[in-house]
Amino acid sequence: MQPIASTYATRTTTRLLDALHDRGNEPAWAQIDSRYRPVIAGLARRLGLSDADADEVSQRTLAEFVRAYRENKYDRSKGRLSSWILGIAHRTALKVHRESRRAGPTDPSLMEETPDEPTLRSIWADERDRAILSRAMDMLRDESSFDDRTLLAFELAAIRAVPAREAAAQCSMTVDQVYVARTRVTKRLRVVVEQLTSAFEEDT
Image (cartoon, rainbow, N blue to C red):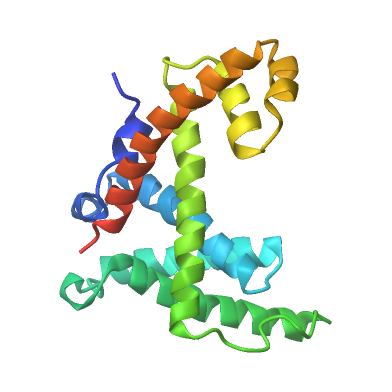
């Protein structure tokens, strides 16, 4: 049986929003949070905020989203949920940056220029893809089809670009086994990433 977290992870955003009409549906709320929090924090960091301020931005953005959604302020006919949240996140990042500057000296080069909308959307897409890959890897770790050694071999060879011979030594494998592990995990990972991307993007 697929874990509950994985089941919700591949639900479309539309289905999750429908589920959120039930305020007691904690798994749905948790999935919205886990889906968007790393993307929002990543966006804030790319805009020049510290890790602590980026975490604050993600917390405030999601809190604002919850409040506005419960007040029926999100109109699906007027645009994608991701665009709506991006707008909230950008405004919140600017506000947190101003607060940090009032609290004490900050790097004057940070956020000197407000990125235009295409740039913001490009940053958002990059951080979304990064979050999806991370979530996909977590889901593979929860599956029983791959042991830890196989996943480690894949991460070393395919993600960290460690030479196959070195990866084999670290994993107590042969070089051929590393290549097999990389091929097997890549095939499964591609499927999971496609599922998560489709779920994330179908939000209107």
